Amino acid sequence: MSFWDVNLTILQGLVTTAELFFLTLLFAIPLGLIICMGSMSKISPIRWVVKTIVWIVRGSPLMLQILIVFYGPGLLFGLPLLPRFTAALITFVINYACYFSEIFRGGIQSIPNGQYEAGQMLGMTRSQVFFKVILLQLVKRVVPPMGNELITLVKDTALVRVIAVYEVIWMGESFIKKGMIWPLFYTAVFYLAFNGILTLLLGKIEKKLSYFD
Image 1 (cartoon, rainbow, N blue to C red):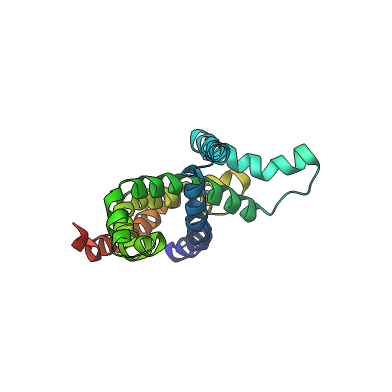
Image 2 (cartoon, one colour; image 1 turned 135 degrees about the vertical axis):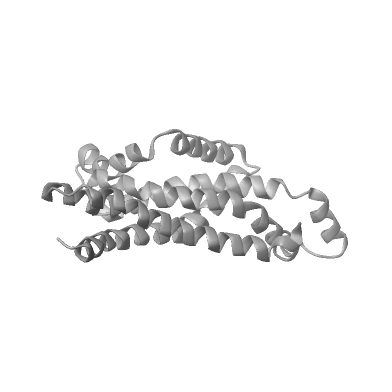
């Protein structure tokens, strides 16, 4: 088997990895904001329920969560199994939304209350102060920790192989049956390239927001 054939096979896995990555971001970021608002709610029952859910999700292994979402409905309630990719996506969205929520909460709480008060003294509503004064500062503060989570997300996509979703490492490992182990190690190149592009993009975003320093 040629080097080109190996690349084509691994690229098929990379497509799955990329789909899982981008769809997770698409749904986890807004869900993370909702969870963040719940964890900061002034209504105690809502706040404690949300914080308990976040604690459970962040405190348990992602691989275990994937297995529960995939097998749980069928084994516990007799429901049909979800499609493998769908189960993986649901798990990743919930997991990363909980992590993102804590990043958002830390960013919001790091903004001095005096900025809200100053804006309201100028006749602005609280929502106007948030969107016109606070939001870009919040983005600036959450970009570095979000960047770390995004890089972790890229690597965590490898865990979906536990329910036979054909991602990059699965494709690389498939060559072992043909007596070739180097394609498995070669998958690291694809992860490094993916994370390298992410790092460059995040660096540009941070640079554009540097005027808040």
